[in-house]
Length: 188
Figure 1 (cartoon, helix red, strand yellow):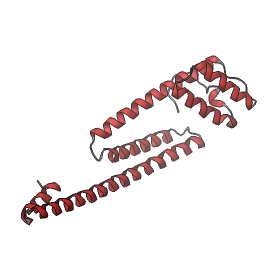
Figure 2 (tube, one colour; figure 1 turned 60 degrees about the vertical axis):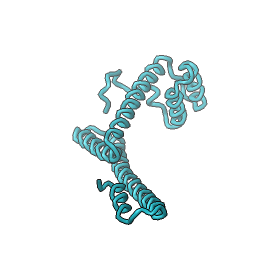
Figure 3 (spheres, one colour; figure 1 turned 180 degrees about the vertical axis):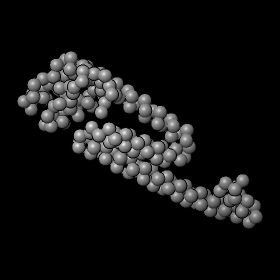
Figure 4 (spheres, one colour; figure 1 turned 120 degrees about the vertical axis):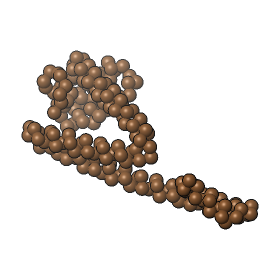
């Protein structure tokens, strides 16, 4: 599924058995944080693997894996930054619009990959999960927008009531108060 140039096979780290999954998650977190030297991370990772009876990872293999992950995280961070900027530039409905656009893009990518016909059942399952997650995110974005709109309307109503109470005490006419409320709600 990847179109990256490479050695044409999975790295040893990518083919570790299931019992090393927690250690692999730890490794990825350590690499992501970039707080320790890679030599120290590799030594501890190999020690963790040895606890499971798994042989050590070579420095070269580890280096290739860490460079690949660093590139992936940089690309992810850049996409996240662009997405945030795009959402902010789209205004109040930006997140909702973005969720819809992303969900549609995921569906299109899934259709494209499925049309090739060379996916394993595991990859098809991953596509189905991605599609389901996109639809769920789309629904949550819509629900969040509605909730925020409702909360905003309630606040505006309370503010208008508070202003009306103060205005009544100050002797503001009902006609003037109606004009103030009309302008508050966006009537011009």
